[in-house]
Length: 491
Ligand code: ADP
Image: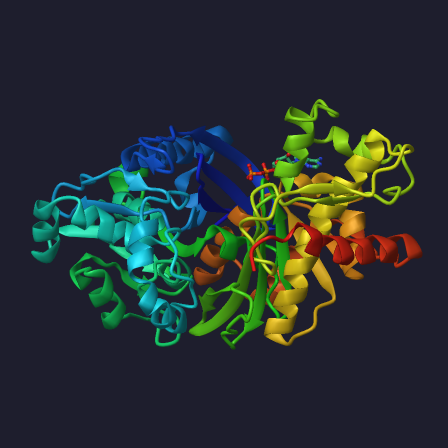
C-alpha cells in the first residue's frame, strides 16, 4: 500500500488527490461542475454531473501517476455538507436536482416550524435553518405527491454527497453516511447517534429514505470492481469542515482551526463533551473514531476574503487579492482607522442582520494602505470575536490556531491574527487539509497509518506566527470594541 486516494467533493468542483505515507499530496485532479440558479436564492447541482466529474477526477489522478490499483490502500471521502440528493433505489436516477447547502428556498418551512426550534436544537445541536438537509428533503417530497408515495413505499433513497458518491462507487450496494454528515441533516440525534423519530415526524420524512450511519473511519464497502478495474475499500467519510479539523490534527479539546476563504469557517474540538453554545454557534460531531465520538463547536464569519474582493472590485485599490498585503505594508499601522466589515449584517456574537459596514477614524492623513490594513485587521478581529465566544462556550483554553484557506497565505493577515488573539498561528505545509483529513480517516481504518501519534510525526507546518502583543495591537482591539456597537441597528 503506497497511497490513500482522497475524494474531495466540493461545492464547485470534484477533486481527487493521492496522498503518500508522509501525508504528501502526490497528484491532484479536479473538474468543475455547473451551478444552477433556477430562481432567486435557489442553488442546485445535477447529482449525475457531480458523480461523472468525480469519477473522471479519480481516473485521471490514478492515470497521472502511472500507478497500479494495488498501490492504493483505501479511499476516503470528504464533501460539501448538507447538500441533498434523493434518488430511485432501483434505477439510481435522482428524482430532483440536488438542493445545495446555500439554497434558501426552505426558509418559510423553517418559519412555520419555529415553535419546535428548541427541540431541533436540543437533539441536533443545530439552529432550525434552511442551510441543513432536513427541510430540503421535506421540500422535495412536498413538491410532488407521487414522490412522497414512492418515498413511503421505500422506493427512494436520500443522501448527502458522500452517500450519493458511495452509492455510485459501490453500484448501489452501500447506502451509508457517517456521523459528521448525519449531524448536519436536522434529523440526527447527536447524543444517541440515531435518526430521531420525533424530528422525522415533525418534518414528515419516512425513515426508509435514510442511509445507515457509520463512524468516520471504518471500511463501509468497496468500489465495484468494474468501475476502476479493481475493488478499493472505502474507509473514511467526513464533511468538509470536520475533515479539515482532523487534517489539521486538532485532536485535543480546545484545538481550533480557521479556514480563510470568502468567509471564515471556524471549528473547535470540544472533546467528548457536546457543548451547547450561548451564542448560536452550532454543536456538531467532529468525528467518530475507534468508537469514540469527538464533538465540535462551529461558527462562521460571512465576510472575510469577500472584504478583500470588495476592495478589489468596488473600491479598486488593489488589482488582485494577494496585492492587499503589499498595500497594507506601505503603512506602519492602521492610522486609527477601523473597518467594520458588516457588508451583509453581522453574525456571531452580534447577530444583527440590519448592521451595515463602516470605515471609521478617517483623517486627512488616511491613505489607501491604512484602509487595506484595517481590512485585514477586520478579518482577524471578526475571527477573534468568534473564537473568544467559542472558548467561553467550551470552557477550554487553547494555545494555537491552525489556519488554512486562500487568504491564510497572507503573512501579514496571519501575523495580525496571532497578535489580536495573543496565540500562535500555525499554517500547515499542505494547503489540502480537508482532503488530508479524509485520507487520515481512511488510512487509519486500514492500517496505512497506525494511530494519531503516527499522524503527528508526519504532519508538517509551513510557518508559525508568534504573537506580538504591543500597544498598536491593544489600540486596534480597543477601537474595534468601541466602534462595533455604533453600527448595530436591531435590538
Ligand atoms: P473559497 O473556497 O471561499 O472560494 P478560497 O480559500 O479559495 O475561498 O480563498 C479565496 C478568498 O480569499 C477570496 O475571497 C480572496 O479575496 C481571498 N484571498 C486570496 N488570497 C488572498 C491573500 N493573499 N490575501 C488576502 N485575501 C486573499
